[in-house]
Amino acid sequence: MTPQRQLVLDAVRDLGHATPEQICAQVQQSAPVNITTIYRTLDLLERLGLVRHTHLGHGAPTYSEQEHQHVHLVCHACGEVSEVPTELLAGLAEQLRSASGFELDATHVALSGTCRGCGAAS
Image (cartoon, rainbow, N blue to C red; front, side):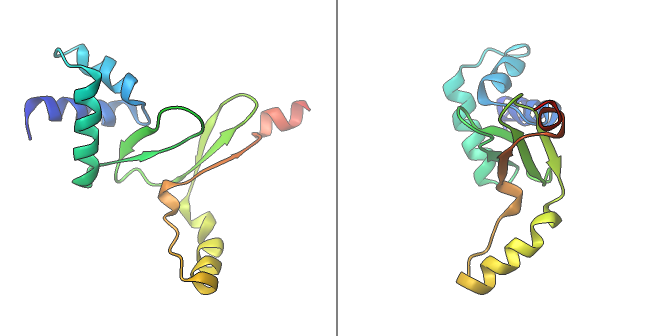
């Protein structure tokens, strides 16, 4: 692990869920690095199983540690992202497996809808 790669991994861990641009800004506080290097490093770290990406809507993916496993709930109205345990999708995962042989990776899922606060306001 090179020092630059370690800085990228540390930034992912420190930020929780972060876009490549946010990770780049964090790393640049310690070392000169460009966004291309960040993308390449994130790709390598994902292939090594150290980080994973999730698409939380339109735009860049967010990255988090591999062990950081949950389902993301994204509010259309306010943009809030909350997390729920992957076990909540166990029934759906079983139905998909039985019906089509499809194995759901619930740790790589973002569900869109309206959060409690925005739902109550409407």
